[in-house]
Length: 305
Image (tube, rainbow, N blue to C red; front, top):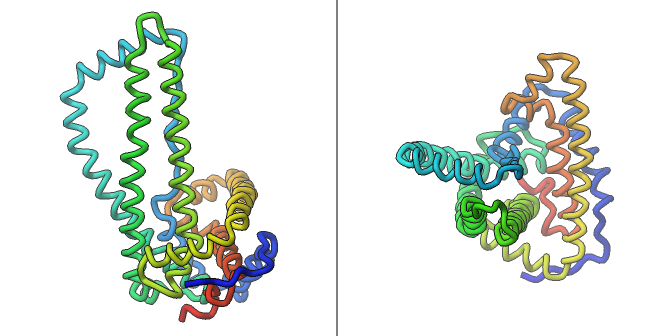
């Protein structure tokens, strides 16, 4: 499918309509039941996607002693490590798959609520079941590929660290760890961009045109082909936008710290999303209004009935 390249696309213009749409959807009039239902769909859409990565702290004051101790500890407890891995890893995988499946379905439910100014759970769940399952399989495939690819530099970094010589950190060891960490960061960024483009553009396109994620991606790649610079600007502006939203959310948390109960509520799953729903709904609305600039075939508002 070919798309006509629009003459003008802005990353600034969708901000105003997105803010106004959130006000209309959540505050005109304010309806607690509607707020809670849309909040549930938003929570489901981003289920399992929060949290940060692990942090690593290295003490370079006694490298070889630490490395030797780690090797000895690993070898001494290897049977228990294997037993724990056999028990814990399958549980983690099952939980991750369930969360990914629910989130994939939830993305379409949230788009359905935002685009149609609706507070519906069952309609979006049933109407976009095939769409959500297709996105789930796509995310699963991307995740498996990412794990296999990212696992190589991680394994290399671990062996480089554990293989340090008695003299301490060698140049080769340091270089190997730095290269491995850099590779993990690059691959993680690529994976994050794929997830971002899928959620922001492919999911709305699928909602309008197809139940297949591959067909949705083909349509998006056709659009991307003649709008690479615009999409790159969108990604960069999203970083700025989410920094601002992050500061607002942080300010809300700081204010909440004045009241212990309010601060704790923000940490509770679903409840935290409900409290921050205007910010979450703005992010979803902004991407939909931005996509609408590329033509009526990408306008989800009023069409998801």
